[in-house]
Amino acid sequence: DVVAARADGGPGVRVLASGARVASVPEQEPSPDGPDETSVAGGSLVVLSVGRATATRLAGAGAVSRLAVTVW
Image (cartoon, rainbow, N blue to C red):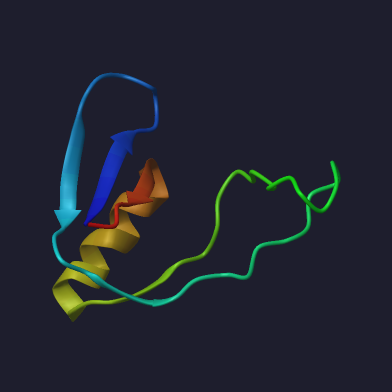
């Protein structure tokens, strides 16, 4: 699923896409804290396989909201 949180930090989350297929995820970059630590960045590009209408909705929401992909 892909959910959007309000960019202003206010309450409320909405589901934008349910059951979206993940087509590609970025490789993890090494952490400056050492090889056994994970790097937490401000975001990553995750490629999803969705229909045109859903892609349009995600692109519009991504311009004004923080998006998160949940795996279930």
